[in-house]
Image 1: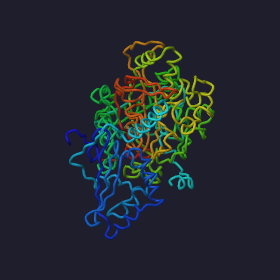
Image 2 (image 1 turned 30 degrees about the vertical axis):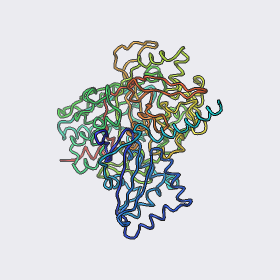
Image 3 (image 1 turned 90 degrees about the vertical axis):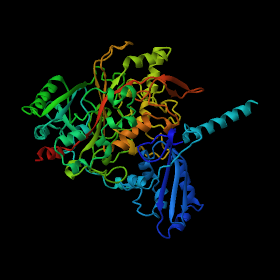
Image 4 (image 1 turned 120 degrees about the vertical axis):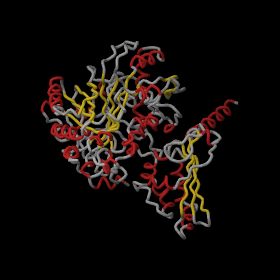
Length: 159
Length: 463
């Protein structure tokens, strides 16, 4: 599978228009519960989900605590190069990442000039990357869903 | 967040140390020339620079030098090295600048006919060390400025002029494609930026409707706070970086005959040709914006500095029924069109100067005459990657940010004859097919435009 992927300027494999993006962090001792608490359902959680939905290039994202809560995984799929937009993320939703990553070792803060280097240092490139619809960006998918819905309504009205 | 901090205290710019070309507009009409120099002897290069510095216009006295003619100096990475700037300073420049524009061709869409191996020599090579631009209101003033510039090279065998490109306003005061250019410019904190619209209103200073939010000075000048609320990383030492900025210099050949034929082939009448062209640009030839003049050109609107730029997209034209989502001006400055996304447009603004070169193709001519003609495009800003390269890769050469898939800018995009241009329309949108590339990159350089003290610092180094 790795043969049909291209390597962009940063780590991570690409297939079609999308990049895999996998980061590993060391959790500060005893901070795992604080990370879990951040994801408890409530207005704050909803606000962050809403912000993530507006990123526009993000297919999915997950945070996973593992190794007895000592390590943290962030795994996601992005359209295009993530680093193109990192300053926009930092300017508008610092707490989207800051809230979680402040509980990990060596985190400089989303507004630190060295943030890109920090991210790259914690990124591991996949051995293999497969996408079912490699040419479809998240924008394309959302548009296709809207178009299909409108088409079905049109057909319903016509029948 | 950066906004509230910024409004509390406006930054004062050292205008007398900032090169005039960065913050000031040229007189109209104007005549200009770009010279590229190679330095084989560092001492000779520094001596040339020392002779040039007194003639470099600052942002305070740019309108005051003899004959209103002025000169600016920028340096490439290899030029800084050729002038003997120490290695620790060279290492403090950002990666994109050190690599140079040719090395970044892939992300800029400079492929195929635009790829660096096809560029005009010496553009894109390590021989380009110093770029000097000269502008004057007329030929006589230009001649006197040229004499001054020649004098700085006298008896310096280690410094050679390796390229000259004359670039002047066309008699029509429009671009080769027939449009008034350079209307929208960012309003830069503390600069008194003067767009052509502002000059039309009779003054060089002052804010006019439509220029958008004031942008923090650090987005365009090093040494000041930027839109992220911090200082943009600056080359070291401080005296070298402060009041400087980066330049993306591009020579873009315009395929005027092909552009005209494409419009003709896709339109049933001259009026429809003009409408298609306006849809592609987002403005009519006069500069009147489609958002305010959707049906036909409105020269009165275009010459009213208070109205020509006074529009937004989010409420006035959300679906692009007037100004298509993929049109040139909507891509290059989306204003408030991306309000529902996380993109902060203030992080992706550009200061631009476009200067035509080459003779006009006679009006109505549809066959290429083989002449070299186009535009010298100058971008200026403190972050080549976040500003210039972002604009090229995300907004000019992709359409995903507005749900247009692969669609590229119809005027400056890296099209290859397979692309489309979507014109929203009720009841059914129109889609132009097989878009050719109208703007072919013939060369380019990333340059550093130092402050005037920094030029002196380089000139006075004794290595």
